[in-house]
Length: 119
Image (cartoon, rainbow, N blue to C red; front, top):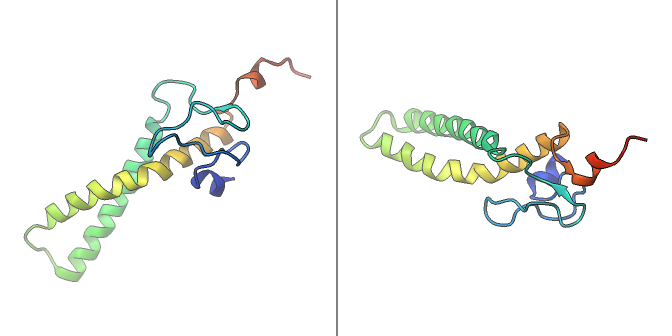
């Protein structure tokens, strides 16, 4: 299911796309009705994950550049430009991963699942 979610599909049913835009999620899954965001700011965790992965990616880029070319004038600008490209590219998969994780932990569910009496 994680692979399905990283492809942008619902973690609960795997059928419909969860994204309404480049980074914006739909409110609910059109196929199964799972509500994706329960609280405002819910996806700040995804931003932290994308940032952490971005830092690691820029550090790897810096290591490769320094080992290949040594310290050169303008290295900091190359790394800033790299970060400006890498972090937005990582945010969508990080948001999909965060959605999967919150679904697996039980925080993402259909509204009527929590309203029905236990059997």
